[in-house]
Image (cartoon, rainbow, N blue to C red; front, side, top):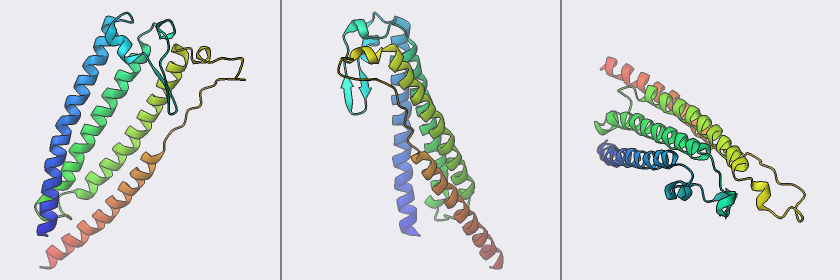
Length: 197
C-alpha cells in the first residue's frame, strides 16, 4: 500500500501542476483569439491565426487575397480552445478526486467508482463535442479559404472536404466505464470486509 500511496501522491502533484498549465494555456489562447477577432482581418494577430490551411499532413499558406475576410474561422477556433480547456481541466479535477483516496492508501473507498463513471461520461461527451466542432471548423475553413481555388483544377477532377472523426474517445470512455464497475465491486467487497471486522 505504501507504493500505491507514494505513486498516487506523485501523480496528484503532477496533475495539479498540469491543471494550472491547462488553465494558463487556455486563457492565453482564448485572449489571443479574442484579440484577433476584435482587431479584425487586417491585423497581424488575425493573420497569424488565419494564414495557413492544413490539408492532412500538408500545410498550405495562401497569399493574403485568398485568406478569409471573416472572423468566423477564428471564432470557431476560440470555441474549440475554450471547450478543450474546460473539458481537460474538469477531467483533471475528476482524476485528482480519484487519486485522493489512493493517496491515503484506500483505493476502494471514497467514491472512486462514481468519479470514474463521471470521467467516462466527460470523455464521451467532450470527445463528441470536440469532434463535431473540429468538423465544423474544417468545413468553415474549406469555404473561407476557397480551398478549391488554391489548386490547379486543370490537373484535378475535384476537390472535396471529407471529415473523419477519430473515435478513440469512445474506446477510452468504455474502458473507464468498465473500470468504474470494477471499482464499484471492489468498494462493495471493501465495505463487506470492514463490516465483518
